[in-house]
Amino acid sequence: MGFLIRLFLTGIVSFIAMMSGMGSGNIIPGAIIGFGAWGLFIWWVASKDSKKRKQREREQLLEEYLRRQLRK
Image 1: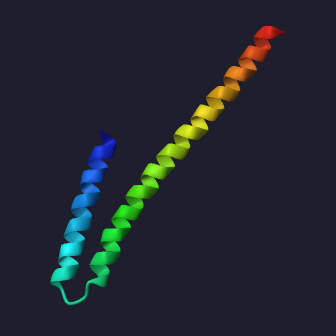
Image 2: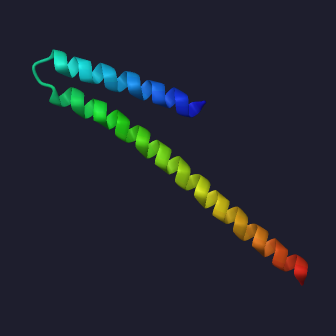
């Protein structure tokens, strides 16, 4: 659910920024804001995946440790 909300907000922010940039004489500020919004969205998705991967690795290490302790 959070993913869809952030995707929707990113789309709105980038659309408004690009349209305002195209309407004004200088497109650069609008383009920077629009692409920056997508950059932040991609960064959020990538960091979320890395956190899940690290947590999964920690859980596997804990399970291995507990199995070894049970065998002794």
